[in-house]
Image (tube, rainbow, N blue to C red; front, side, top):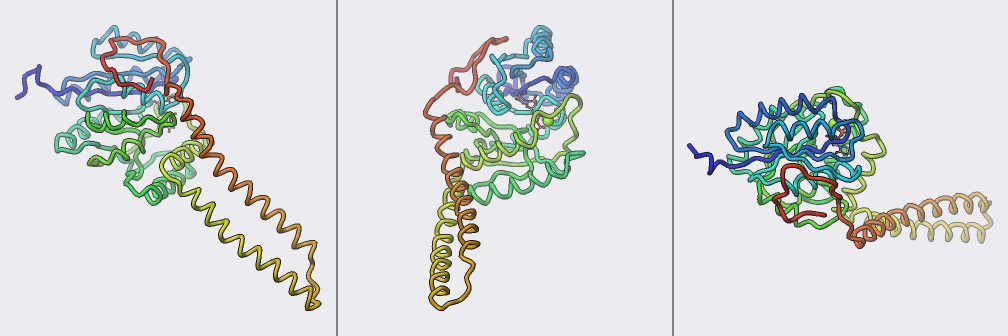
Length: 321
Ligand code: UDP
Ligand code: MG
């Protein structure tokens, strides 16, 4: 039996954006689950610019329990930035990252810890069934995870969100990644440490509404694809290589047809070609532009998030601020 001084510490990081109705249940369930692990623990709430009173609720948790720490960001920086802020401030030997809307059930934490004790560096909660999620969300998630694994060449476990445990080694490797545009789950997988998965049934959110509309999901997919792969640039090159001979042959066909006196409707061919190549160029410029935009953002080297206030101390030095 370990003495309390030698007990390992677990940090739970929860990014919060307008989750006031979910927070009391989350806090109760979290404390219950964490007490089952026999680990020393802390909870790090990151208030990501909430406007519904979530910040006040988090303050009361800090007063009620000294094991709760809180970071209040100066405005809404987005889920991935808020998660990064929480990970930067977590002190544990292992860090669990989870959503605050009870879609990531705290009762799964002991199972994640169990796998960590077996020696895994990263333990991902893997959804087996996505209750009540739209067919679009399920289909897009299915395609996304399989496409990413194919394109980047390392394993992004399918059907895992941000709900995962990372040991200190994985956390530090994650913190060494300097990029501004952060897609946490892919960066964590990229570190290459030993990963395990624990299956769970993902319930619908308890209250409030999802901040991820279709457009946000597409933007996130684009961020992750362009962060980890230059395949779209290569696809653009391949399209160009295919289209140039095709266009050359078409022109040759028209010329030969005219020389042989065949009735070639030149106007139609010209109009269709202009549309086709015009569209193609827009697509290729767009792909190149996406990468240029990312280079621009990275060269600005702005902090990933800005902290307005911290409660419960700020013991770690390495941050993305
Ligand atoms: N979240 C955040 N900042 C944002 C959007 C979301 O911190 O700008 C938090 C949110 O409070 C929740 C988690 O990120 O704890 C996941 O958000 P959401 O449930 O809206 O995403 P979904 O589960 O629909 O993918
Ligand atoms: Mg959710």
